Image 1 (spheres, one colour):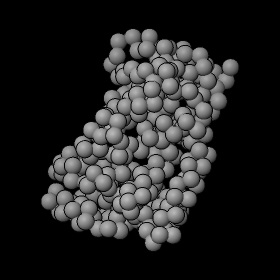
Image 2 (cartoon, one colour):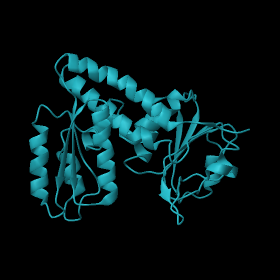
Image 3 (tube, one colour):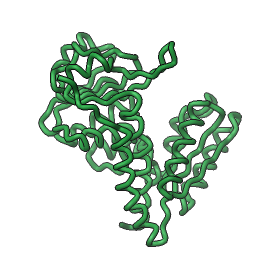
Image 4 (cartoon, one colour):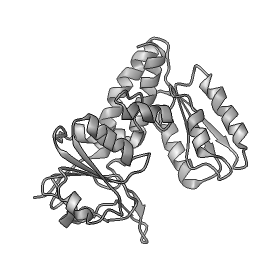
Amino acid sequence: MTARIIDGKAIAQEVRAEWKVRADALKERGISPGLAVIIVGEDPASRVYVGNKVKACAELGLYSEHIALPADTSEAALLAKIAELNADPKIHGLLVQLPVPRHIDSSKVIEAISPEKDVDGFNPINVGALSTGNMRFAPCTPFGAMTLLEKAGVPIEGKHAVVIGRSNIVGKPMAMLLLQANATVTICTSKTVDLAKFTRDADILVVATGKPKMITGDMIKPGAAVIDVGINRMADGKLCGDVDFESAKEVAGWITPVPGGVGPMTITMLIANTVQAAERAAGL
């Protein structure tokens, strides 16, 4: 059996079209959903990510601000800029591209962003809301992964989902979202003893470890849905995920490719969170 490929690019376009309808409805009321992205320093990868976010806003007709600050910007100056944008009614979503330079405390930055504008879903208030089932914003990557499962028709309720990775950005919120969808959830790490014992029992396997090709086909339950969140650049310059795609696709029922799987969904769900923030601000 060969797995059905979950095409993240195609699904992202479909989902963006759905959210554009909601954005257009807001604009008919005179409200243009606005996203502000702050980047501190010249990290090349961060500059690419920020550029892609601004481009996605333009494609959907959203208002966006790209604030580029020099690497020597003080923590106080960054926090002041965040406070300014928190108070700006044109801005519904606000994020600071991580990582920030070492002299800036990223925890203070995340906590400074208004929970009502925290479209990354990283503010502790929003993390707590997610864990108690009163979600305001889900972090974009796990939100995207859940949307892929939904759009691909993967059954979740009552199924055993195994999440490999415990990061605050992907692993933990992914587990919470799966629990809210009535899955039975196990969280593992790359250090879990006899990891394959857990992965072979997973109806849904989500892998987010940053270790290239660590999950092979013999570690996957036949027919399982495999969501590969990892993206790694190999010595030959090619990109690969945390799952060995070639062996896994011969066993799994569904699988996401890398690139072209979860990646396109992350920015799409950032747009979704921004539109939702604008809807809430308008009392809708």
